[in-house]
Image (cartoon, rainbow over all chains, first blue to last red):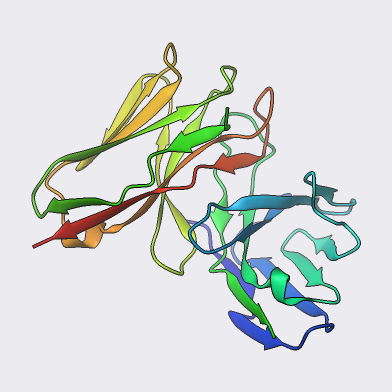
Length: 118
Length: 112
């Protein structure tokens, strides 16, 4: 299957700093990438949808100024958590979809980034 | 009603047992569904897509009941390596589209 990488795998930072997470599709072009967040023992929650060359679409309750998303190319999307606070500590997972929708909505997931804010 | 609902478990079963999970969804217009598997502290991985009336892949069978709006996952001859959390996934929002909504997952523990 398609491969999606994510860096860094984990990061520990101080409160108030900004953290950038990269998501790359390695062997396919991803027209759409998604960013999820998962707290312990909870489900994945979609944060935003990122389309190459356009602004990201954020889900209700997700602050776009705090979670900056850039999808500069068909193989790279970045999520920047600005002014991180301990409550932002979570498992951030990206996924990528190759096609243009239709019946097959299969998304390929990156390995995730575990963020801990002290 | 939640978009996707699952029994969180955990389900503890002996090796070799057959176990089934159910998942209900709220959007009657949804066309395609998925079962993902997630190991502890790892990303979800696609286990099966579920289309029309269901499909089978080795020891795994997924079924879809549109009238009752639920899908199920059956695992036969369970292995220790099947221990994981199984996520039920449906299209998010009205009319389907590209987004997915995940259930909270059903935890399975297969024991000797």
